[in-house]
Amino acid sequence: MTTISADLRAATTPGADTELGRRSRGDMAFRAVLTLAAASIPVLLGFLIYELWSGSALARARFGSSFVTSSAWDPVAEQFGALPLVFGTIVSSLLALVIAVPLSLGVAIYLTEFAPRVVRQPIATMIGLLAAIPSVVYGLWGIFVLIPFLRSTIFPGLKSALGFLPLFQGPIYGPSMLAASVILAIMVMPYVMSVSREVLEAVPSGQREAALAMGATRWEAVRTAVLPYARSGIFGAIVLGLGRALGETMAVTMLIGNRHEIAASLFAPGYTMAAAIANEFAEASGDLHLSALTYVAFVLFVVTVLVNAGARLLIWRVARGSGAGSRAL
Amino acid sequence: MNRREVRRFKSRVMTAAVMACVVLAVLPLILILGTLIMRGASSLSLAFFTKMPVPAGESGGGVLNAIVGTLLMVGTASLIGVPLGIASGIYAAEYPGSRLTWVVRFVADVLNGTPSIVIGVFAWTWIVATQKHFSGFAGAAALAILMVPMVMRTTEEMIKLVPHSLREAALALGYPRWRTTLQVVLMTGLPGIVTGTLLAVARVAGETAPLLFTALGSQYLVTRLREPMSALPLTVFSYATGPFEEWHRYAWAAALVLILLVFVLNIVARVVTTRASVSHG
Image (cartoon, rainbow over the protein chains, first blue to last red):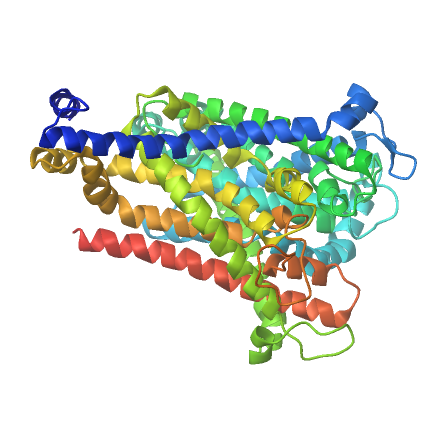
């Protein structure tokens, strides 16, 4: 194929007044149009970074790096510190992973190692549907179904069983860090599950067969032969889920309680970077407030780009050669 | 129990544990869809689709403005995002050696992982701040930016799946390269590209965050993209977080409509590929 098109290109030098020459002008125009379209995407990203950077100039000049270490957020006094937002974003995302990762891994292991062939696709499709549900619908369900359930059943149980830990002390609110984490866990689960599944499927079946031939039980084969092989890819899937969780906005906004505070208790309300932007941007009280929120967006952007790049690197390492993992990204 | 039985027992316990994970993972889907239908379906009526919202306390309104807004903004976003995504996808597949391809792929991955709220802030600084008013167009632009990388990557993947022999046959028959690409390669990959595009449309149709401070929302029936505009996800958000019982019922009904829209797009997307693969044998 390459030689043929190379020959064609050689035969169709631009400007030659032949039929082939005219065709090559068509090809050049075609390539020009495509190049323009393709080049517009990096230009767009450059513009995005520039806009976020210049939009946050005011806040950067005023607060500098103390922006992410200060907890004051007072639009009236024009004091802005994003530490509670950074804290809330990290805690809610990590907690979501603590809940979602064992579940997703369990599902992925079941689907690749244990499930009868007929149920694999239906189960994967159903869990995939979770990823299609809009974030705002999760938020709605969270407010009216999940929070009442957590507040009446799960939270009191946690408090009486684990109340000696500071994490589970204090008054039980409905909207809280823990409620937001639970909804986030449901939302990132399909992503972690589907990438883990691709990674597990990329493990050569020789690995399993060797373990089984040595007399391992099926679970021992999974634990000793399959999981170690897929380890870095699974880690990549988890980091990818982290990237999703960090930027998730609507459901978290509706469930986390939106309070600029750092609380030890998971029952207390919190705030995240994305939620603060969603709540305050349209009604920002002045240029500095807007600039501070743009600064938050810039930080969020940088963090998610780094996290996603790390995830891709990890998945690429395990899936190198097999091509798995690349489609999920 | 001897050692062998312990190991077998452990294997059985773990099998049961991963099956329990499946049940726990599927449960939220069933619960969410179940509540949506139970609480939303009773409020669905013809009026819900054809009437405008009424002030709090009155009953019998609808969400016509949100439906129109969603269709207009998603339509506009598709008009911008789909051609751009497909063209750059073709570029990446046709010129895999070029340095621009490498850059575009990398940038598309970065944009794909960017939180949609950040795209919203970008659309605000770019369009709303310079025009000094909220507009449906700003919302559509934000949605278009979300669509481009998704459409681009699907197009690239689908074109790469087209067998080289098809392309060679067309070139050997004397087709110029651009016609080979458009009429042979693109047409062969089309079902997959349509699927990817529909999934991208479904995904942005449910987006709320990038519309919050671009389209803003509106109580009026707005058909001009220069004005602030409502959308179904925005309606769900404002009704769900509002204080009135009546609003909450509308929120459930609007969410049900939204999810039906998203799921129908998903199903159509899948049908397109299945039918195409059947007809190709």
